[in-house]
Image (cartoon, rainbow, N blue to C red):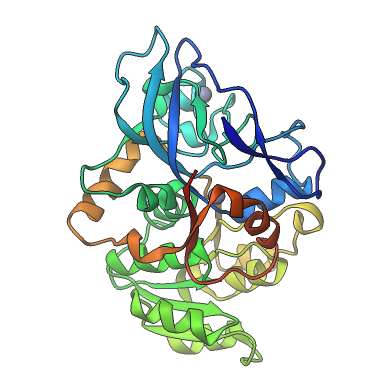
Length: 346
Ligand SMILES: [Zn+2]
Ligand SMILES: [Zn+2]
């Protein structure tokens, strides 16, 4: 099969012909029909993720069709249209059996712990636990765009952030994660403030539900601006970018007993940012992480998509071919364009 391969961290990946994957006894092989481009792939390529062994095929936001299933797989067969969470749970450890596959102790991640979906085919283990059936009407590009950013935002807003109608939600950063969070929080009935450095993204944020926007490049004090708009601070706030400044602002702009959810990855030199711990105590703030979403939780999100309350298709940005993927991957370290780029030609 054709795949995007890198042999060294930080060196240009190339298109190579490599052996097709074979299904594990409890796994499947999926013919990839669409795969999203994500900043996490860029981090992996840069060598920020110590789970990767070289040579490596990136890609973890995938949708496609099952072409082969192992002997132990009972719920899936060739021809099924599926997607999969980026954190693939073992189904047997304490976290999995208590329903928290997203933090499985033995999790595998396509495109990180093993070869991913920047390829014609990808192997996924523990298929019965992790595969998610796609609604008939959902196209592959949309399904791939759910992959990590949309589902992580769904969990961040709904399950971790526990957003309720009427609350103020601040979203720092309007890339794929941020825009997803804005759409989801707004569908939940919250009042959303979008914060970014570009007017173009803020304008788009308004179109998908933000009721207020702050351009951080022209606003001297973002925290003060959020407090003014919200009359005292956000109830829930999210760092969707993953940067010491946005993380600090997101915690600092909360009102008493507010919830901060960290979704943007903090890796390398950013891994240990400053936290206003004085505020955390005095205001009884909560600091939460959000790491993907369990396969079984997709159904609530899929029903909101099916009924038109969520429209992830609006967040699909550029569609490119596998040949264009290496250059697009290397460019992910810079600022992204609007929406989620997806490889749709293999
Ligand atoms: Zn991702
Ligand atoms: Zn597990």
